[in-house]
Image (cartoon, rainbow, N blue to C red; front, side, top):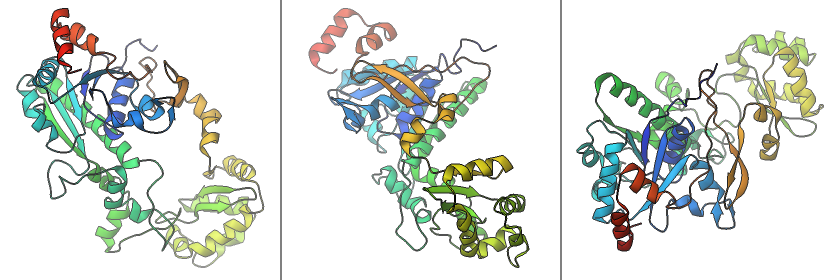
Length: 398
């Protein structure tokens, strides 16, 4: 029977992150029960307070990536604010930031600064290109790291213009890698009592998730490029026209190719010379795909998917966002969760894909308003007196 405990309940995190990669990392930690104190710029906060979609004056982007967090707004250029962070570091287990390299050190809240007050602190930095190397000082957004990390070289039609992936996938992957690294560091600290510094570069993350594209080059000396929706080594493995739209079909081995040929009532294709293996079919990909599309173009997408499902051939419709929002499987997997917000009202956000057998359901508390938890952090966590809080407020550092 599941317990009422969250997997990361008791883990305490100071979150200096902004936009996507860092907030996604700390959002996932918060979903699992960690207490997240998000430190934001006084008066402005995270850039995503102004990112679309916006309803009224509130951003749905910010509300999604910053659920389960408490907001502390500070002017980090003020020495009193820096002292608050150092005091908070004594309480924290983990710090995460995604400023440009060197910024936190100039502010006096870098790893060495906080390690001095808490030697067991785990401190994670996400940046475009990491803290070392010739590109470390380059500015970056996801699209830059997709461009320089191989994603755009491998996305788009063959011989055509390179494209980024629709979502900011490198941002997301960097956040996932940081959350993984943090938990590895927490486990290491449990065994040794030693904290450490973690450096995640978004370009590194892109390179590490290039599947077999980079290895294709290092092994064979050939540099793969854009190939539409095809697979690098299998055919048919593509999106095809249907009678009413598109359908994705993937046959990654001979068994699936045989099933598809029988389903199409085209078993003679199994005997066609040069089409005997994945590799040989890949060499004749245009001809293979044309034969498949003769079949798919005569049928509605739903019928193709149903028929493929019945025999175990991987197939799926190209679902639009509104279809995903209404999909029964997405609902059954709790991948849309409704969270009420004082300004936005009830909104459905993507859920958490991790499913646990022995711990309770995720906590999905709304994102904070800017500076909403200043008093909670100062009084309840740091034990600051009302008089001292009023003095700091008079200095206008919040």
